Image 1 (cartoon, helix red, strand yellow):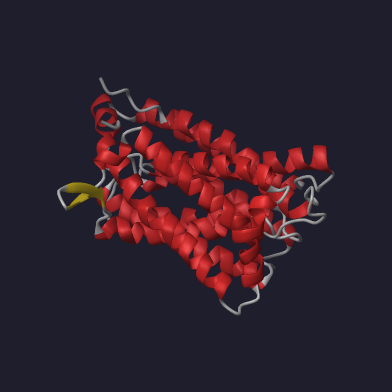
Image 2: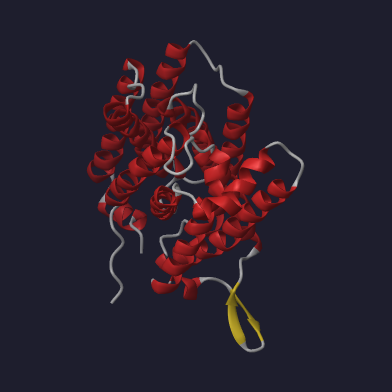
Length: 341
């Protein structure tokens, strides 16, 4: 008997719990001198081992959980081999962009974690209803209301900072992140937001078959190039494995893997993107605020600002609204249609 899928609220809680240590470890690697090295690591130095170890964990998970059998397969010499379809190949390229940008977003010294979280998550909030409209999916009023609450949290923080002033690399990171999410949401909406668990699992496997190797290969190409970033990446591919930072990077990889699984499960919920995205966005921003608090308490870094705290309150209100309103206002037959199979 197949187990029922956990409610989206529980999946979101797991996502939040996994995201907090990931944020803290990423920030610690980039701001605290590591044992045996005597210096901090740049985001580029930590990125290769996190992606490589995360890829290994993903392969072990989809194989052990049996998800791999639901992926599209081609037969080679009579043996079935998982192989992405064109749609999931495109989604995998979008996911590869996220694999670059999320770790980098946590490493800009002069930009607070909650602010980067709000900017990147806010961009995706604009995309979500656009994708729903394009694919003619009904958007309920509570989804719009939650969207407004999360957008208000973003605007509040922007106003406090006096506008959108970021380093060029941070702006590029945000742009690539937004593009990657647009591609993913469009493909998810077209082929995987059906409520069929087998289809969801197959989609996850096919997307990762593309995203993980593509992201690692691109990093290898940059490491071998004359670009300035190549030196940092080369260290991350070669010297990190014998460094004192490896245990902390290993923990970061575990958290990174868990975040990727729970994030996909939230976004692949069969309900409209304008419902699912605020859940995932709010949880990630709250994780950023919680991580910033813990880093301030234990490592002497900056506390979240008052605007970031008020923004967090708005996010909690948005998640509460999304959790309660469908249970009150949806008719039983509509709930049945919205419930994952």
